[in-house]
Image (cartoon, rainbow, N blue to C red; front, side, top):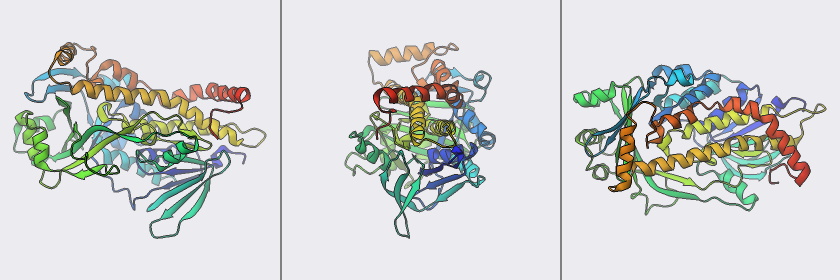
Length: 460
């Protein structure tokens, strides 16, 4: 094989990370990309999602951003309020995000983002989707051909050979489990002790309440905070929907099977959890129809020893699941996809051939480029959640003092998502440019390591 673009790319999972992987490789000119998805169709669901400048930068390269941007809300301020009183603790003005980072900070519907990625994939003849097809096992990780078994829902299991396998199969990743076992490592999924309600209210449902309509017609992202709980809210879908995402102690899942991630919620239980929040919040929660309350379990796992083995690597929640308090979960998965495609594209062809070890080394470069950054953001999201959930005491008093100082433009605030210093670190990041700038050096350093230690940093 004399052209790296002839490598066969197989993707497990058609969530945000999987769709992004397929599209990223297609945009780089790869000709054989297969996506295996257990579900019979993508059936886009979900609630609101943060669309930060570092995400827009990637999507714009793929031609996906304009349509998403057209129906998104450009956030120009963030209001952090005391949940019980609706008292504003801080108002962070964000009118110049686009001027500073090239793209605005937007919020939108998850279906808009996923739909645009899928639409982009459908335009690429190199991409083939295999729906209703589940991964059963991985037999070989390479660095020669990767072999794995899939089973169509209404068919017989069969083996597949590929050059590179990208595991975008989420927090429950079967590939991760097998990969870590192969290197005598582990990272059990663990509970965070937190759960979330995701709520979407239509303009028609809010039309009777002037205070609610003011929120829906604004460009402000709100956060109501209280002890061990908070609610994030903002308008989406051309301001026809008001999105509320909550975070509270996980009590309903405590006795549930460990595999359970979602459950039909109880409206009275939801109202009880937020019973001491202000009347405005309670009026909105009361609009949720009985029987339509759904609660998500928020789960994680400790940092992994390795994301990569041979010609297999992990993407998104399979390797760095995060709490939602920075709004970077989907963005990190999509950035992963862009970076891994960039790295594989740069694999050198020597003497008209591609060295299989070079593929493994390129995947390891992807891991090196992404690992520290993603884990830093995961830690920051967890820290921000702990800060927002403080109960009465000196720590809360100090937090609220810092919020008050945050009214001055440019000052840091305890809510890391809204803090200008954190925004600069996250929003200015260009993952593709970084990969292009650093690939050769990192690739060479791994080759040197192989000569010295007999390994290129990839467990085999």
